[in-house]
Length: 342
Image (cartoon, rainbow, N blue to C red; front, side, top):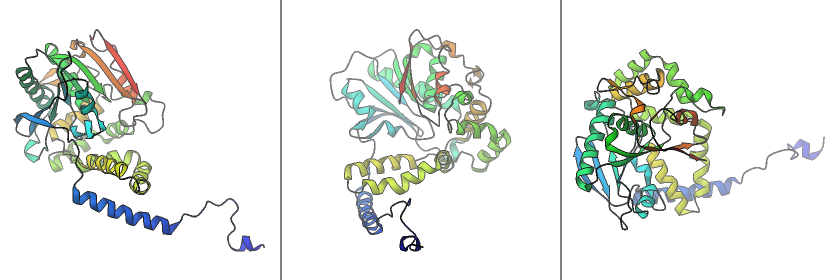
């Protein structure tokens, strides 16, 4: 046996990491993250003003940065599983900043942090009442007869439901990664897509009821953990490998920490709305079938008559593209377009 073989050999082996270098980078990372924590990592810093508040829901208007463009005001509507602050992560990575730069009058709804006292709030409260009140305030403030809506994920469903129920109030819809057919994940050929849909269908309605009843709401910590477990290996790489690669790039590290701050901020989801979302939408697929009701009245998507821009993420594993693309032909929109984002 050769000396190389006795010592374990090198043929075909992976190069060993430089453990001393990794340790040094780890120490620098700890110092950088400590400084960031002390200084505070802020997101959603584009200046805005609170215009209206009702309970935990508030409406904000961003301050204009240039002369207004001849377009309707735009109201951004996020869902309840995360925060609307994702549209204004940081300077240079801010949809809000780019819209303001184009002269758009940008508004945003903030749903706040629901508590046990809010367990009876349902989709009607969000998609009909509060969204309707916000639009009424917006119209009064701007003098515009209608506004456009940018709905993100579950917020896109809110926007779509409102446009169907009150078509005269909505000038246009932009829907980003918005599920419409909650069973269309079966049509996606990519492995790993639609696992959330499959889980939700497989849980059983009794188990969903029990989980919600235990805490009155659907805990944000639970939903955050579910999203994390959809791609567990990616989560390990994100937490373990990515920060070390960023330790010598303060700007990139700050971006990473801002994204982590947003991901960790998962509000609880009001129990009644969570029940409708998981059972009526995910399990029973009621939206695409015209059986999802607001205030007891089933919503007909054919009542939507405004222009629609459907923004689809091509490799989205949480909202697979077929779930969003199913909207085509389901409304009375005279101008329906798809924006396919890689």
